[in-house]
Image (cartoon, rainbow over all chains, first blue to last red; front, top):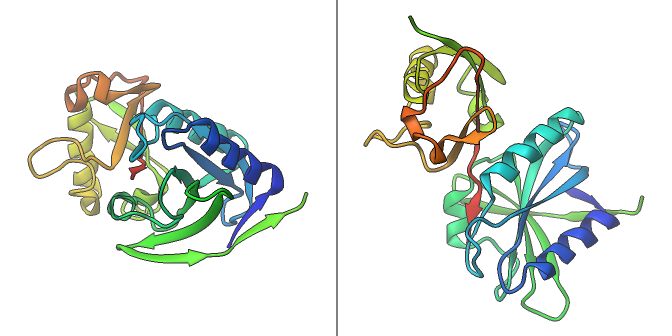
Length: 135
Length: 93
């Protein structure tokens, strides 16, 4: 299960909308060993594309360092799908580097944004619930 | 004489390096450092460098704050006070 605060959820969806027509991407950090997200890092999409994303390498380094300084760890990456469902694409699966990470999709295909979270292990996709934590 | 530097590993590679987050390796370039890492931790073979000798696509490598892709890639020179960080290259569609 991935636990997000209302504020994180709202920020993630807002980021997806801000980046239109391109895909947005960012990283989520939690206390190590948990999936309770404490921090969201908006990252630049180095691919600047409506069909692909690539987390800017400098943003990746800065997020990782900041998370570590706060006793947190990057546990998830999110990105938006502007015209398709909130489900990992074949490219997402092929490039998923870490089976311990969550891959969060924000779909803007319909009027109401849809957020879903997945684990990707050796090419196998497993969805897990996203719980909103009203803090 | 070879230079010893600190190399910081991403979580996904730590399991292949005795569970360590940070290791020491010797070399004067990023490529030499990687060769030494694979000597120390054979399970890292194929996870840093491709068979054709290019840097693996799924990692970002930094000398301090700089992505070595924008320096001299595997030929990037390394000094004693430098820290090499490896992080996942996160991308998709």
